[in-house]
Image: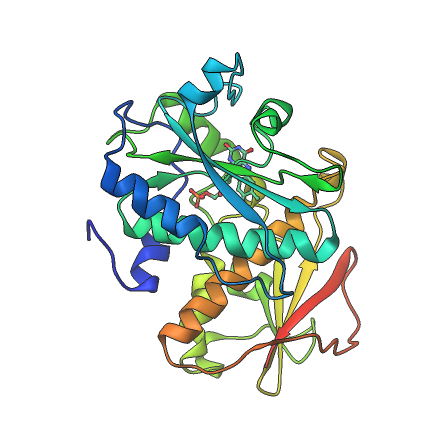
Length: 280
Ligand SMILES: Cc1cc2nc3c(=O)[nH]c(=O)nc-3n(C[C@H](O)[C@H](O)[C@H](O)COP(=O)(O)O)c2cc1C
């Protein structure tokens, strides 16, 4: 499964890679990456964040260090995205950068969402940021080393990266009181399983889905205190966009038709939760 080609294989194959081979990427692959950066579909709310490929040397020429506080080693290239700052824009940003990351995975390239462990102000110097714009996250891109470093293993252990919450904590039937089981929903069981495998900041998995009739309503259940770490960047909204990307791409591949619509079912919510969007 070196070059996965179904979206399900790609989602299963993707994991955060923090150690890279230092070689340069060839022209052909650089062109493919550049094409990808202008190709993600508009987000569920129509937002159009923009993405750029940066090479370390460009930064060094300008005396800028694309630092990651030692979280990433060997990477020569980073993809940096910018967007205006709004609640919907964070969701759209997550959706669009995850779309790019899944295509990179299909090309055999490694990546790692970085929402915290990068020097945001240094990266910002290389982008033409308007006052209203921000960089929610970046990712290194390149060929990952075969083995993970001890540091990567420790980071993964700390975040519990291999684990995902149980279905009963994530997916619900009609309201938040009744868990949804995979037997209840036919082919959509695979779609939800692909949501469950999505990456999220600190692996908090804040996405919740409630199925009412044939509609899948997406909610965000915030991790208490998490927003205080980077108050200007709503990383958990970014997580929701990532989950929505997995949902839509898998549904489309399986020929399960639908589209996004704002259709708040106004059900009673657990603490720290909010409605985001629905798949109808
Ligand atoms: C929005 C977002 C921000 C993240 N920020 C960081 C980060 O700053 N540093 C880091 O090492 N990993 C970061 N991660 C990676 C997560 O820790 C990782 O996705 C999670 O532990 C699950 O592991 P996996 O991606 O290997 O499946 C981030 C992931 C997401 C989705």
